[in-house]
Image 1 (spheres, rainbow, N blue to C red):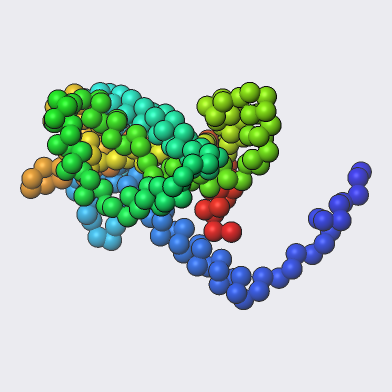
Image 2 (cartoon, rainbow, N blue to C red; image 1 turned 90 degrees about the vertical axis):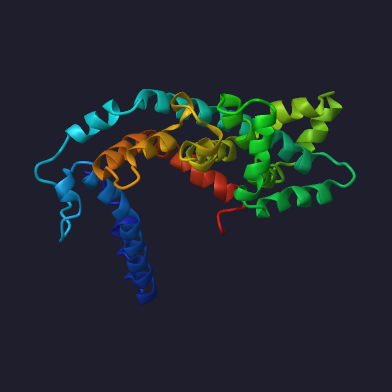
Length: 286
């Protein structure tokens, strides 16, 4: 029988009052964050009379599993799901491409006015989306792209925040690698593709998760730029369940639970890279 390790034999230091208070605050914050999700899951399994009973019932009796079947049958749920998948995936790929190219230029290339141009680029982060929405809408109408995939995908394919995040990470890669590659005859594009991108796996993975989640849940732009049922994404499609005078909360929550599943899978699979990418890019609050 092997002897216990020294680490396991050492007594754990008692929690100091400040740490205990911090743990209590974190536990309270976690419970507050989880309550809406628990309420959503509980409501998705309730009958309409059970939803607003007081005191609230967290475990419904009987459990209305048919809410999920009804939600899928009262609307073209598969079409909404497919549209969300196409739009979120396409935007993620395009935004990674455009942002990494821009970040490479701002971080690794030397040209006159680079810092001023980057500050102007960052200044666009201060402009609310509601301000740019109208010009984008007019441009899409001018190009006759209203109610098309192009209108849903191309405007969000460029992001100043993604460029900033990638630039911060690219600055940490030694410039000696670029100089050695240029001596060997590599072009800037080849350095970006063959050297910088392979060394940026964590931040690219984190950005992939962030962009996908953001666009999977996006509601305003798909609502404005689409008109037909066939082009609606999942968040917009779920609004069908909200009538003018009443809301079918049980069906709406059932649809929200189904819509949340891919997001949960993506986040659980990539959580490690999500946190690692943010800390290594300097945005983790260290």
